[in-house]
Image (cartoon, rainbow, N blue to C red; front, side, top):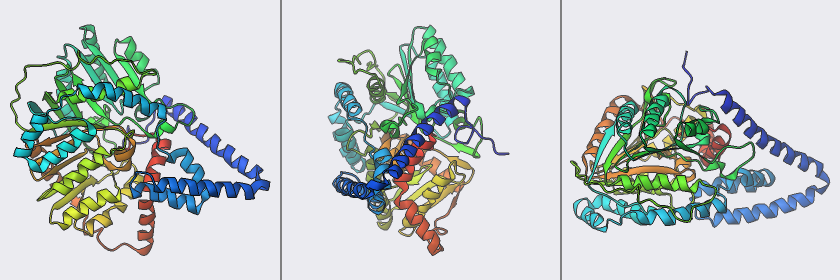
Length: 532
């Protein structure tokens, strides 16, 4: 019998109650709207006219938005074809705009924190001399995401999340000043208990400990009093964007980041959350493939700032000043490795799709190969064009997706994107041992990324994410070698999806691709699961 845990159907009683009331509130709102429409039949003509006018206004607004056509076209079609339903649905879940108050809060916090990071123009200049192929991407990140590139940083790669956890526990136990942990999901089970034990010991030793998690990501796996329990242990704890039994427009924007910072000297990130299946304690979908990296040195500053951004922006009232001097500490550290390291964060509250732009840039810059691994493949036309154009240029473009899905509907959408990629030369592999949750890319033995950003709409457009761009360093080759191992464990399905689809299947997949962005939004609002 298949074991069911975190990304399956096992749910805590608390999570079920909270999600039940949230969904009930939305359903009641929908019932009320239907009731009002039926009661107002006598005003049907006026309502139809008003809705049609509103539909035209919304369509014109969508047409002029600075968004990819893949995001706006489905809404335009839905609104024009079914004005009342389309307008209502768009107003409920399609705006994807955080409240202006929340947006202003993040802007205020960023204005205080991001200038604290070094400019490192000299390092960027050195990068143009040594690795010009990657330097343009670093320039983009520095100018538009405002996260600089560093040297003097050692990077350790973990091809299994369990290896990262063991190293993380060791480093946590040695913390002397502070520990910051920000994760999309925490499961109050064995793996977290090991971490909690160390954190409690460090608190008793006088170390400042902060834990920050996303409420939606953890809703099924911890009790609502989890943060209170942490506070009683001396651990400062905050919850991002709590799910309440009322519809929240900001619900669509979740904190998907996964970062640990220790003393401002060591940092961890990667694809794994703090839940049992990520470390293969449980096996709901075969073997779980996840990866992570450890940074030690100057580049840790950026991850420190990224966590402080979310922590301070989550306060009800933004502090007038944010003192970071006690956290951006200077160490006389001499890295053993060479290369360029650039941690970065991505926010849905600005006009930059940082995660997507980095992936597109890597495909555009690649000369020999560009490989990706992602649990979900739901991409924009821009991303698809970059991948296929690279393949047409003769670049070996490959994508690894799971052989065993965690969510069958989302997996069907993922597979619907195969044909448009493989017919232009992109190769698709499905990892047969289980579910691959890693989010990585590597190109030309020169540059690589590791972090939380999937090749899907939610990661690229809706969520707070983070990653690390690495160039001309040893870890790039380690990630490349891991990809090579994964290919040998995967089934290539390129030819299978190149031809042979029935007209009915092509039509169905076309509709699924068209409305993939809408489907992902709905899934995020109503399911409340990690899914990414």
